[in-house]
Amino acid sequence: MAPQFVRANVRDMAGYTPGEQPGPGERVVKLNTNENPFPPSPKVMRAIREIDEESLRRYPSPDAADFRHAAAKLLGLSPDMILAGNGSDDLLTIATRTFIPPGGTLAYPDPTYSLYSVLANLEEAKVATVPWGPDYALPIEALLATKANAIYLANPNAPTGTFVSPMKVSELATVFPGLVLVDEAYADFADDNCIGLVKKHRNVIVTRTMSKGYSLAGMRFGYAIAQPDVIAEMMKVKDSYNCDAISIVAATAAIEDQEYYRQKWEYVRRERQKMSSELTQLGWDVLDSHGNFILARVPSGKGKETYLGLKKAGILVRFFDKPGLNDKIRITIGTAQQNNALIAGVKDLAADGE
Ligand code: PMP
Image (cartoon, rainbow, N blue to C red):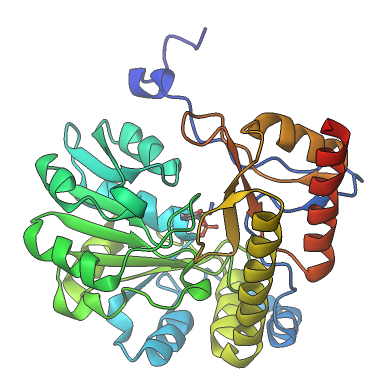
């Protein structure tokens, strides 16, 4: 039993469970946490190596000024529309603390990123989950009916990889009076995004991460985009120095090297297409993904057995033990070699089952 002196809302919640890590020294094909299969750009590695002692001795820029400027330049926005965070999880935490009061409500279409409910619980806020519409359409009416303070929308969504058009999100932001947070952790792998909505809608915040598209999951860096007066309120809530000096240097060099990363995103998209059609041919039901992963129903409907079978063969994928998801597994798109290993593993399992 949890200690008596723990807050009741913390005692009662499960907490977020990240994807598993391989054991020390264990060699696996790791396709379970949607990382980028490529290293960070050489310019990022050089920038990290060149960090001087002085920048470590002193506190970092509290608003990650260099990064803010670089991101603003790339996106054609002003730096006061950018807020940097310690991964996009940090920005989700900041947004929840800024916009959802205790007793308030956070709504989102479900299934989605399971951290959202944890963040609401920490604020002693309620959660209203709304099922996705047919073919993962945005359930606008049902979301409105929740009368929530905020709606969080992962777009592309995790774990489904499905995508809602910016036009539909704009429709929602027009009729919904609260905050619409669009979590674009996977936007680098999609055809479109919602950044353009921020200028038009004061109640839209877009969050981005350097973990996926920019190969910096180990660094912890993300950013939010919103109108300056919205960013200014979030600025009051964040930790004083929420990004460290090394991650600011790395993230700035990364966002400035679009040429390198664009090629990697194209590669992942090609491999996504290849893996989707190969699994479809093997009888899997693959959702059309806009992220660097796919969610697919296994032909037997036995998601857990497939996950465990692949794990035994040294291939890690993600399994969600939830109704509606437990007949599927989520597979991160890796290098062609890793993806071939996954397909070979799947074929072996099917042969074993026969
Ligand atoms: N949003 C979504 C939808 C995610 O899947 C993830 C990764 N687990 C994140 C945000 C968080 O990413 P990070 O904190 O690494 O930026």
